[in-house]
Image 1: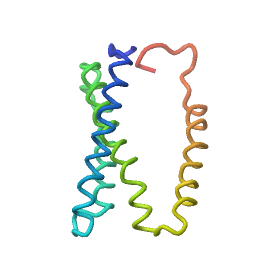
Image 2: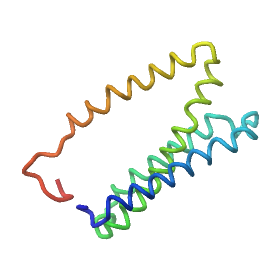
Image 3: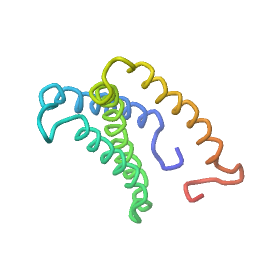
Image 4: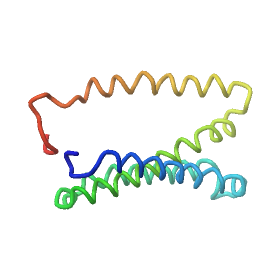
Length: 135
């Protein structure tokens, strides 16, 4: 709401594009995983690049002039990249480490996520006296 964009529209777009990102990495992987430029690491790199581009879009100097447009474009890119990452992590773990300890590795990965999210929120909370996008 601070950027002039409806949170419900952002979350709807995020959900749809998240699914698009998952399909964009998982469907082609079945056909290209043995190709030198089409393995899991190629899709992982592309998903990370799209995600980083979405976050980086908000850092551009002109992004403040068109706040709503920049937030919407950033939301779209982050959604596709995030969906791609969530879609490619399980096959990447399987192809890299095999299936014998896949559940343990996947569990360790997401225990780290579960620990880091509250820590991130605690470390980077917005001060109560801060209002708007500038702080």
